[in-house]
Image (cartoon, rainbow, N blue to C red):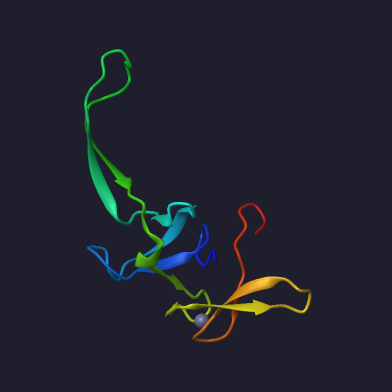
Length: 113
Ligand SMILES: [Zn+2]
């Protein structure tokens, strides 16, 4: 039931980034979590490490994983947040589809644009 995939546009529906949109950079199905680029950012304090040389101490901002149920897929066709329907195409392939406009949502494959 991977309704959300990498490179999908999603909107955050809860928490401090509610209403913001971003692109999924990572999906962790086992943890039921997603990482969305530039959103749900958290700060982590890092101590300087002498032995590492280049490592500097300070505060690092990173995109924290969040529960997959905190995001909703944004349809690339009607640009509305939507629930995902599943369609079976003529060639037998399963695709996701938008419940608002009914258009198929094709997975974006990096390198195959
Ligand atoms: Zn749509």
